[in-house]
Length: 298
Image 1: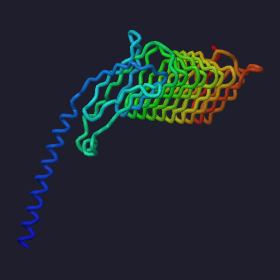
Image 2: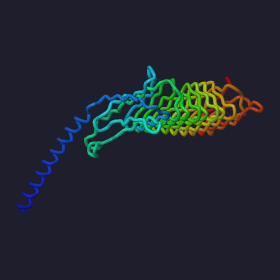
Image 3: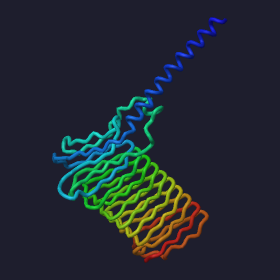
């Protein structure tokens, strides 16, 4: 019995010693990896496309003061960005070389990186920008053939013309799209508000949210299609030449349109106030389960 107790004590002591050593090494590695490294990448090769895939970082697309292209990042020793031009694309991708215990036991301070891309004012082909945790912000001055922007946890602020299709996606965050034209535009967030301002879409504009409000200001399209599970929809001097369709489960639909419509409006428990139908005008379908509908012509 005594021998067993002594053996257990020895094993426990050895385990504590090893654990203490591992903990000390882990803290040492954490201190080293928490150090911020400022890096700048000067891009000299030509490219038409932009492909950005980040993990924990805020992304900024800004105008360059000249014709140069550069990428500025704050990084860590084992968590950094790989920046290169390959097959006609500027590619920026997060490289994570941390071991599992550095990620989950001795994790870095929960601080997002900054990745800033400086581009000359020009027309680019396809833009694809993703970040897992972080905001995405655009300055004016660029044009893309198509653009896809997504963040899992973060806000998006977009304002660049697109000749073809634009897609903006956020799982948890607000999306603001302003001052641009596009052929088609699709904006979706699970938990967040959607704001569209001074936008012209020649074909279809769709906005979709699970929990959030939709606010459209001075926005026109051939077709406008809005779906909000829980949220209000507000129009301010907006219009569609072919059709408007709005559906919300819990929320009000209100605001001003620029021209008359053939209205089809229904609310389960709320009041409905819409103008008299204009003969031959495009259809405007408005539906709310438990909200008010109040639309006027500006």
